[in-house]
Length: 210
Image (cartoon, rainbow, N blue to C red; front, side, top):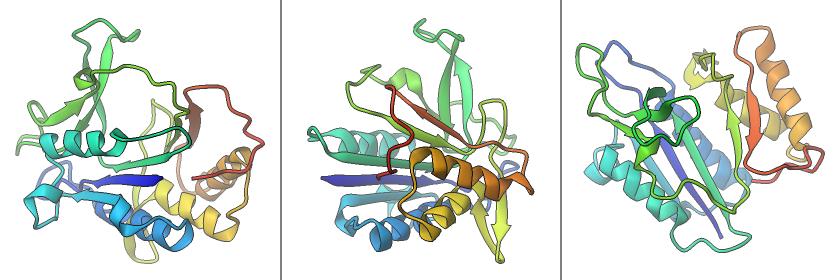
């Protein structure tokens, strides 16, 4: 089984407005359908331009969509989660984070730029670990930001653009080669350095799968 959850938030009308996140989520959806044989009925898309209230990335909808993503999963299933939007940190309240902070996904900012009360934090997780192999691609180091940019006159995220461009050129790369290809595309124009991480040791020489 292959299921996918994508979230794109542009924060329209706020000082923190972005431009390419909704496009990112929609472009990744079409990329998976056209190139990786994902089925539209196995994909959930949440964007803040949606007209259906169930498809707007509110806290409740995000958490329910995450439950949908993992419920019913079995060994060897492939679960894909894509997020384009702001990220941040809040003080850890239950003492389970070594750095003293929980990560959060702000889904709405007030007019003064505050995200308080409008975020999904890691502290809402009931389970802190999983026996599954979790592989994460990030647009930058934790100390950096991932660029919201324009390519061919279209707003997009730099990481998403590079990721899909590399796989369209060569879908049979190893994890290591794909990371190198993505970094090479971004190197001359952006300061961000994309990262590959995993919950368990993996052989990065193996062919990338999704």
